Amino acid sequence: MNIANNIKSTIPQPESAREYLKFVEERFRSADKSLVGTLMAELTTMKFDGSRSMQNYIIEMTNIASRLQTLGMKVDDSFLAQFILNSLPPEYGPFQINYNTIKDKWNVNELSSMLTQEESRLKKQGSHSINLMGQGVDK
Image 1 (spheres, helix red, strand yellow):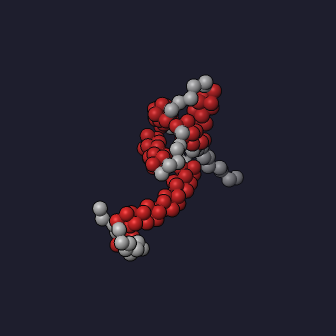
Image 2 (cartoon, rainbow, N blue to C red):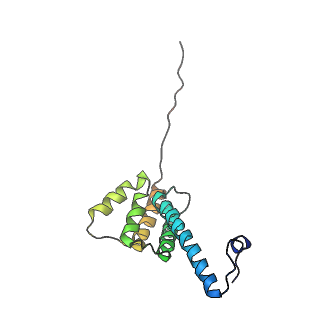
Image 3 (cartoon, one colour):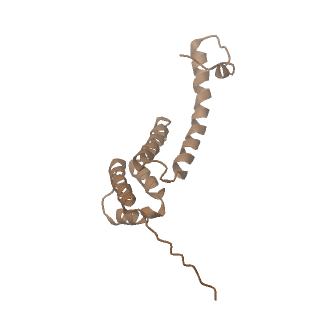
């Protein structure tokens, strides 16, 4: 495997491969802790803004949760589903109310499917508004 030069220069040259690997492991353990913090902050502050599809947004949140899991931080499926629901804009309010009134809890895949349908419905519905402007006559 290759190691970048900027990383190689910070690793001492021990006598054995075992010592070398132990140092590398310890070095990246602290990097993992800071990465966990960064990923948790990203996951908890994400907001759906419509700049990408709902499907892609949920995939991104799921990927962050998976990365956290590989770093030893388990993100429960129902916990992630709640994060997704909490990150939705106000136009998804009726959807959230409906979810909270049903007895079943959806897993992330079920939630993704339902939110994709809701996104489609909201796009079809659109926001229609008319501005009426009149021209006054001065007398």
